[in-house]
Length: 314
Image (cartoon, rainbow, N blue to C red; front, side):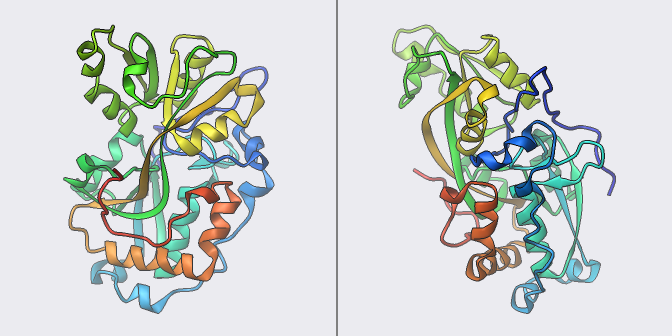
């Protein structure tokens, strides 16, 4: 399929500052080099090509997909380790989302057709039939479950980070602590939705409302935090931990705020869900699942089994 020209760019400075993926990241310092644009040993480790078709999982495929022999992914790309390019010249995809998508396709006996797309455009495109599956560290929320089905493969969630020298802002346990501050986050994400839907907590408490600035490019978000144009950053737990592990980012992880399951996104009622679920559970059973998580330094995001559209975490 045609590759979209829309992409999240890696931010280059004199020090080649790493950037935060709006969709997901991990925490293993072994992959820090990839954030600066070059491949690392972890990023290029192949855990997928040796996988063979699981007849039991493949038997659950809808007939039209089995006949076509392909599965169409709409994928958001940003920085490691969610989904990124190990080399901007050859644009070879890598990351957690890429490994799991490729591994599942292998078990189902399908060829991946992957099109890069802006994060905020993928879920609407599923309903139109443009893609079979969406990837972009999509968190399972009650709002999304109204129109989207999910097949879960990791557990991540919402967290906060600040500049390393900012000691005034304490761990956020209640959004009222953000009153009067400017928060930077990703456009079209659960973070933006959470912040905008709960702005009234400040006026209800008689405080100045916080301001939300949403960014479509991960590099712009990090730069705004570094330069003080936003006071605090809200994004994925794994992504923030990966960011702060890289000294050049000049940021520190504040705290986890709300855990979320993360899954392959599907059109509501998609008949692909049982096959994808069976494939993820096969990866968990044979150990490939754990190896992929450890490759990207996110072993703490493991789930015990894949579920289809579970309720949002309380």
